[in-house]
Amino acid sequence: MFRIGQGFDVHQLTEGRPLIIGGIEIPYEKGLLGHSDADVLLHTVADACLGAVGEGDIGKHFPDTDPAFKDADSAKLLSHVWEVVKTKGYSLSNVDCTIIAQKPKMAPYIEKMRERIAELLEGSIDQVNVKATTTEKLGFTGRGEGIAAQAVILLQKL
Ligand SMILES: Nc1ccn([C@@H]2O[C@H](COP(=O)(O)O)[C@@H](O)[C@H]2O)c(=O)n1
Ligand SMILES: C[C@@]1(CO)OP(=O)(O)OP(=O)(O)OC[C@H]1O
Image 1 (tube, helix red, strand yellow):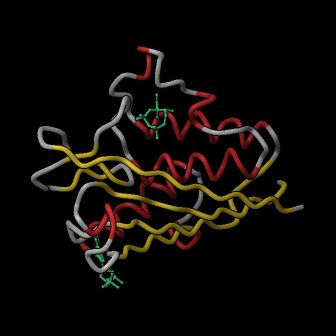
Image 2: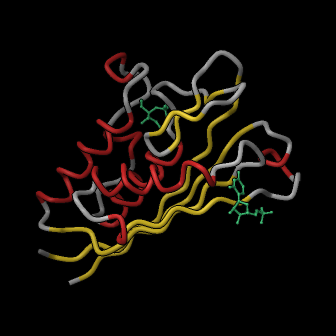
């Protein structure tokens, strides 16, 4: 039995924060703003996982009003979500993600992101795809005001 889920997330770019995407710190003049470390890609994957198993979204599991999640490592949040998925009897078939960012260039970091996501979802790198696109300078991503990410995941019953 298969279950599909999709995720979408956006965080604002601001000065004075590290840029962490897919569990990887990327050298850049700005970082993403959030209650947690604001890892837009791991949040998106977590939401896709929760969607696939009908468990709501990360805001339900980790409220942004809870001080426990202030500056939280999103890898830990995704690991917790993955435990929920496993408890329901599912394993990873594959996940496909897109980062939407005008800058910086993601290409040098994509393989490391795939490795980290595969590790967190207890799969192999060939089960994880990460892409990046600009929006050709259009919209909030194109103006460099924020970064968005989306993901589609397929889970299979163990
Ligand atoms: N932040 C980004 C955006 C894009 N890339 C890579 O560049 C390719 C071309 O992007 P377009 O938006 O012009 O289609 C894209 O396919 C990615 O390989 C990137 O590394 N980082
Ligand atoms: C991750 C959480 C944790 O408090 O906070 P944020 O970093 O603000 O990220 P968001 O994508 O808005 O999701 C809400 C929260 O679950």
